[in-house]
Length: 204
Image (cartoon, rainbow, N blue to C red; front, side, top):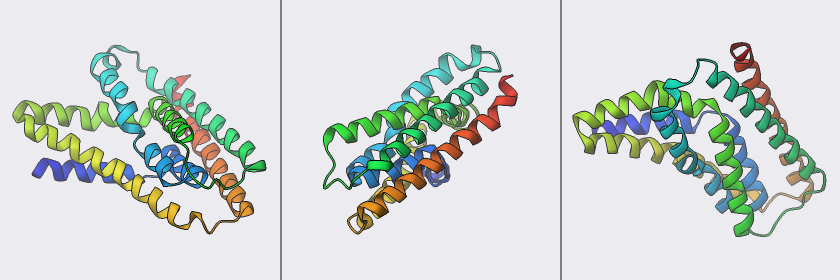
């Protein structure tokens, strides 16, 4: 039980941290409702399989510049997502419900951003990875509890945000919806620029 508490604490800290995935949860919820928002929040379940495998098998063999370069590429992709959101905001209209296609597209976009972002890689390379391996070697059930707690709170925090936003979504007019998308687009662009500014000096 101790390790599930540790996992919940680490996951909650990551779940409430502002960043590209948080903004995507908000914008996708506004676009298509709570299902798309919750699916976006669940993106780490898809992307982190790649991250964990990469940390275990690849990252240790890569040069030190690998993560900074990934951060710059990820920042560029986040900015591109912001531009796409801004273009949509110019003509966007409220949808009455979330279609499966749009929800799955939201999940794919969020998973792509999460893979390209260096933050999950850093989390698993520096904190969760070593802690999980150490705990697993001592007690496999405790290791499983740690990882379970981490993802429950990481995804749960963002999923709860999606549900709360969806509750007020029906009160938005088309004009308010477009302004909300524009605000999300700006936040995505700022997050992308922050990633590039943070990692570009290390990548050069």
